[in-house]
Length: 234
View 1 (cartoon, helix red, strand yellow):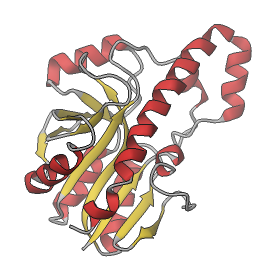
View 2 (view 1 turned 120 degrees about the vertical axis):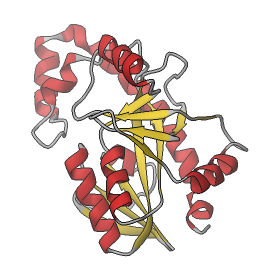
View 3 (view 1 turned 60 degrees about the vertical axis):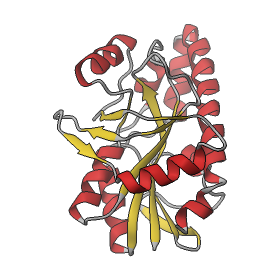
View 4 (view 1 turned 180 degrees about the vertical axis):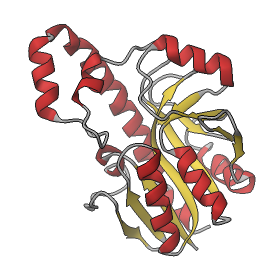
């Protein structure tokens, strides 16, 4: 069976493979392991999931980073969500058999966190907003792509799971430079980022801290990726 993986960011893609994949396209990185680089956001993720299904993927994984909504989660923690909540507060289930299988395999090598993952249709920057989402939904983490992929998987009757590593803890406000430097496709424009830092140098420490958190998340994803071969062949 072909396992399809949707990845939103090039940095997340790099935790899986050194192969180059153009945005909106997919590529086999191993036998029966097909990866699509979607770009950020639910629309891009849904299109990538449809592409993987059309290419013969028999099950789908949402792979990458997430923001913590629970105070118990720290940067680098691995989330295997056991429930999904969309932006309309509707709940979706992941494939319980596949979830249990992967959780049992990975638990031999690292700590696994479960709980609900909630959908965000835009970046949630403030700690206050993250705490409010946790209070309303009970979710432990959020991302922008997993639910869109899960909905495509459901439409095609494909098993689905999400594998996410925490970047920003719930107490962290994202640097203003992040939102300022994004283009319409959700990509960070380096020129805009550098200009913002030039005009707002006090933003630099926050960006450095976020970078360290991102590195912790990528380290976790690389560790999980080292076991993807066995996961994909079962």
